[in-house]
Length: 357
Image 1: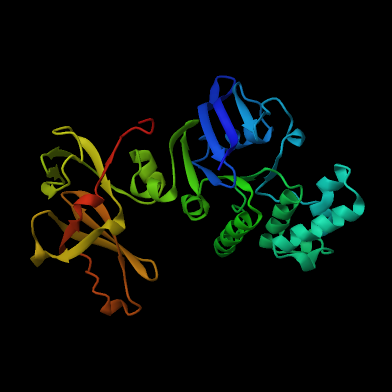
Image 2: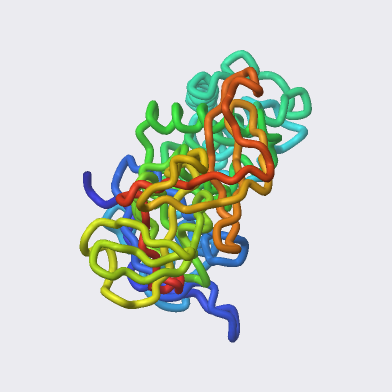
């Protein structure tokens, strides 16, 4: 696939405040890329510079091979979907979808045909004559998507498109959004602070912090091999602890754990981590080489799974475990039980302490 969007050393300053700091990024044609990070990290500013709503302080924006750095939004082959839908309440759904075409001088009959086709794509072909107030929140968001794709942009930008929806509707719309992206074959660039949403929808996730890209990779890479404590903590839950490697042994949490050779530099105190589902809870009687003695301090139920909180050498750790429908038959420990935590050596991650690392 060829690159459809290229950002070259993009920065944006708001007076003394640096919103985006020297970001270079390429997005391939047909990719679904998500800019992920907390509020104020620069992700929305970066999206707005791609769309032409902000002009970079330095650097260039290239879309489909053309330098569009100084072009206004209506001169760029992109369209944007905002989180608040921005539908005209007095217009029908069909007229909302076709509005941009009418303003662009497209013939009225073609506007209606293309609007209907776009609404069919999002499953709302039968609501052409309805008014926005007659639709649910999810339906209004799908109208906003139809309005964005009807102009056939090269790139569709999505600024927190699902944040206004409740949890159940949001999950359903995630499925719809991915289905639509695959069906129309457009390049999607989405902004979100929701790591679950980013992992579920994206081909690539770009994690940002303080205006910079701190890691760029596939969802499984970011989850299994985060580059820093910042990424590990922002994407999912990670148990973090300090330790030193000597040969094939990790000295940490008051114990010695067997680890793969070459896991980390010899003798340096570093931050290590593991995901809650990457460890097992054993009975205290099964203590062995590489296990951690622990005390169960809490159990949090999540339907078909439970998060068991334990204390190891004064440090709290979380372990996830699948449970059966019958809680008493699930084999979960009780609060106060003495147990052993077993971590597979290849599941231990070495993490940089700084987001910039």
